[in-house]
Image (cartoon, rainbow, N blue to C red; front, side, top):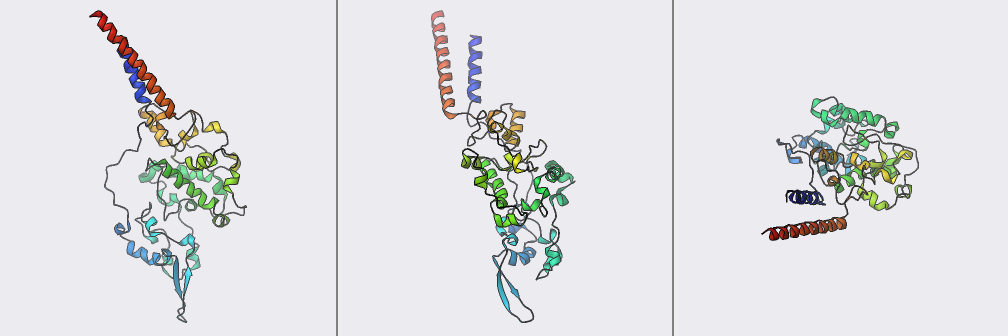
Amino acid sequence: MKITLTFITAILSVIYLSDNDGPVLQEPQQEEFQIQKGIENNIFAEDNEKCLVCHGEPYFEITDTATGVTRKRTMISEYLINRDEYYRSNHWSFACTDCHSYDLEVFPHPVSARLEEPYNCNDCHGYDEQYAHFQFEKIQVEYDESIHAEIEGFNCWKCHDPHSYEVTARNTDNFEEVILYGNNICLDCHSNFERFQLLTEREETKIVEMHDWLPNQESHFRSVRCIECHTEISDSILIAHKVLPGDQAVKRCTECHSSDSRLLATLYKFQSKQFRADVGFLNGVILNQSYVIGANRNVILNVLSYIIFAGIILVILIHVFFRIIKRV
């Protein structure tokens, strides 16, 4: 009887672990006061509006002070700032002049101010204990070894627009949102030839044609980020920044479609490490909408396993019942 109960307990434990949904992992919520993002909470909003009166609108006016003639001009898209996006971004609380020269307060802007060298991430975030856990210094090392670092004029802001950039990967468990946001960063140049030409003399990148070898192409584009295949895996930072040349991109199916999928070290990095540390049960960390052979469960097989386990338990209970009846 003791052996039978132990066996039943073991089966019930397996059934519990076989639950397809699995626990949802999130980073611990920090219980600290944070000012709500938004233009109404930015103390520099009024000063910023002096810039956004032009840079926040699709058109601006320029006047010849000598003749008094005024003309309306289209704002170049690269210098057009979406107010709503800015006041939702990571840098929402800043004044424009925190990062830009005060010389830009003069209009028309002097050429020297317009060509000023922009700050990079480490100018503010590097070697600062407050940001140490984000590993900005290691990110810089990876970037310096990246194919992007070889492009003259390329910098952090070509991918992470300081006026709209929001951290997503570590702040949400919605992986569809993470994937879409991450891929849009890459496609903003690689599928926009006008922007692409600003940085390189290469021919236009035709994303679909270059990936015509990839089976179920649309599904892959929707289910993983570009960097899953185009960066070197990093164990020390959340998102790898060493972008590899195209000929070094991942092309072997088994690198992702296996029980030790590289996705566990990239897209699902935080969840897999945290889950293995807390529970030691690997498969539960993979999201249901992502299908990875060898790492995902099949819903039909799950249902069949429930039926089989339930049948086994029923047989055992019937057996125990009749044994008790005979003894009585």
